[in-house]
Image (tube, rainbow, N blue to C red; front, side):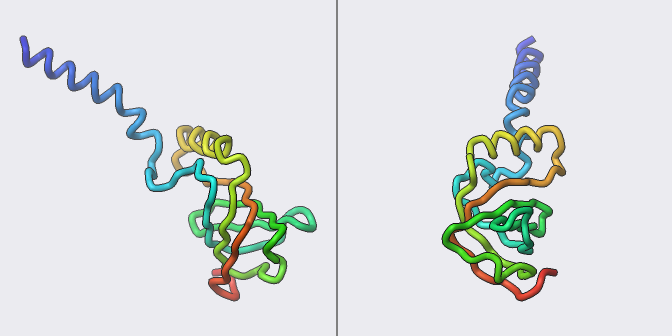
Length: 123
């Protein structure tokens, strides 16, 4: 009788903690981080002072900067570092998207404070 109770307790405990364990498939990536570094192909955005970057994992980010001149690096592979716009809201949106579709690609907005060129072309 005690072993049946113990087995049921272990099974119930596993079910109780499984949403927390499986909700975030990549625990190393904090989707609500305020500062992010992204490497990818830089392209022109929708407006005059807006740019976009597409990372090798398929994530896309809309970029703006008051301090870094991005226009001369369109078509280059670059690493940009900056502050995520509304990091808490971004993290919640991305975690909800991951819960629905584990293959969903991240999309966000970044205010770039630093950039370094990786390659003069996009691969």
